[in-house]
Amino acid sequence: MLPGTRALRTFEAAARHLNFTRAADEVGLTPAAVSYQIKEIEEQLGLVLFVRTSRSIQLTAAGAVLFEATVDALARCNARSAARAAWNAARAGCAYRSAPDSPATGCCRGWRGSMPRIQICN
Image (tube, rainbow, N blue to C red; front, side, top):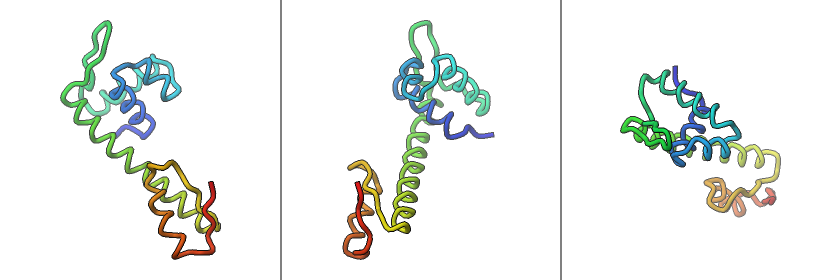
């Protein structure tokens, strides 16, 4: 069984911060819940993802590989979600601009000329 999106987001935050407390703040969980989710992922995959000491955590080689794959997978999910939201908004007659670095922003630029009846909303 593969980890779910929520667990992967938790893993990504923990791996990026190398700190369960900061990851917990980011994803809205307790540090104990982050630790539990990481243990669940490790058990599901049969891999040790972090080396834990009393004061810190470090990624293992397997953890580093999963971190890179997770960052890529989550970026693709976010891009597809933004594109889907832009498509749904266009079908409703209004395209919403997202963050300046969002993939959906590039999509909206081309719509102004090709779909003049669609309003670009903030």
